Amino acid sequence: MPEDAISAAGVRKTYRARGQPPVEALSGVSLRVGRGERVSLLGRNGAGKTTFLRIASTLLMPSSGRVEVFGRDVVRDPEGVRPLIAVVPQEGKPFFHLTPREQIYTYLRSRGFQRETAKSRTEEALGLMALEEVADRLNATLSGGQKQRAMVATVIATQAPLLFLDEPTIGLDPFARRGVWESLRRLTRMGSTILLTTHYLDEADVLSDRLYVIDRGQVVGQGTSEDLKRSTGGTLRVSFRGPFPDAKALRAEVQGTGRIMEDDQSLHIITSPERMEELLAIALRRKLAATVGPVTLEEAFLRLVGRSIEGEEHVGS
Amino acid sequence: MSGAEASFPPLDVTTGARSLRSRWQGARGFTETEVRVQTHETLALATSMIVQTVFIVFVWLLDRSILPFAMVGAVIFSVFQIGERVTNEAAYIRIDHRLTELYHASPLTPEAYFLGIAAGIMIAYLPPVVVLVVLAEIVHPMGLLAAGVFALSLVAIWLFAASLGYTFSTLFHDSRAIWPYSSLFYNAFGVLPPVFYPFVVWKAIIPAAVVPAGLLVPPSAAAALITWAEGLTPLSTGEVLTAAGSLTFFALATFAFAVHWARRMAREP
Image 1 (cartoon, one colour):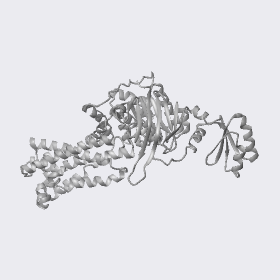
Image 2 (cartoon, chains in turn green, red):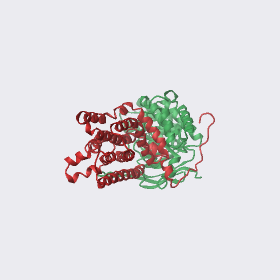
Image 3 (cartoon, helix red, strand yellow):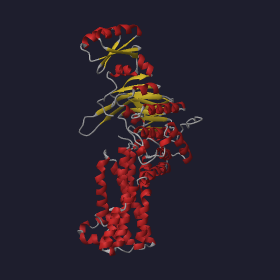
């Protein structure tokens, strides 16, 4: 039995459309996801996360490279892979003319589950996603968050060994997001493996055993959330909020106090507790708003990618 | 999951080439999905017979002698329309709901998915057609041969229209862009050729070189065959063979292609 749920080596994908220049969405992605792990692909919109997820879930052909799911090649043996996986597609919506109960039950039936098993798993999934109260309402009448929960419930009800979730909490309120996170944690405790894409840093932080940061079709960072935070070179972040009347002088003044990073309107210094007072003194002298906090994934992302996670990449999905 | 947490089933799932039977197994489950989806759309079910009813009323008012032809035509048209509904439904599921990926990344084979959509729509829309068949039988009672030809022709028409519809649906990225084609299809296949009116009328008004087209287009080939079997349309042996051959060929060829296409489109190149 292979140890890896997913093993990918040198995966490239180039989209070609007639009359348009080719777009390289993946430029040699290599990664591995161990059995029972929850792994996130973190990146800006268009970084290549969905492209990789679709290749690994047999929905898209790679241009080159190799992806194996539980030791089975997704290109040569897609029919061997498909019974082992379930996918929440990005922006997938449940059938409007079914109820959540019908949606989950019929999906399980189409995957070959016996009626009784399908019924009991449907009830379990409805409970896990807190959908009991709306279980018999048409999906068309549900809120956006409830529809998304119905999608996630449909997939987790399969208890497939490997679940792919493409932005599973998009559009959910904080309470519902935590509900999804908890159900995903339970699934991995039961032995399932989860690969999800997200551009929510908090989600990647609290949910992932490990994460891969993807930018412009390449893996630019990997490890646990703590590994990535440590890689910023400090434990504290001091942020000066701009605009700055004399940015050049400010940068010169903070030089040497830690790693300096900038985004649209702020200057962040990743530093140690020993240098904090010095930096706050600069803020006071220059009458700048400053905040101090522990280093988060945001700083790690900024260091790895050079831009904040908001916004779009230039490459395709 | 609730209560005592069960562990997942072992991973030794059967792989490799799947048997013919297993390739179609999930179709039953997905048919159940589609039947439930379709039966929620009661207005669509209720209005599915409007065009046919209007044609029958016109014939009733204008020339009752061709009523048996119109009744057969109404049944064929209805079955063609049921098959053709796959176009919009498949596109809607894929484009507007993005659910095709949910099903394709699962043990359900692409061909079972296609057949599930087609069969689900067919089951949901069948009851009014049964009523039409009963009315057709009252207007002109059928013998055993005619009933057999009727049944086989309807299966062929449904297979042809559903296969054409599914294949066609995959060519679009915007489901709204497909809407005009439905009207084009059912007029080109169901209204213009001799489906609602006798083949002899077609023969009389169409240039001789084009007449065989009436026996090649599947719905009118079915109409000619059924009314021939009922003793309403005189056809030569050659014409019977042409109509039967065309109907069989188009039904099987479009179905085989749709299965091939469904498998190919399950993974974006």
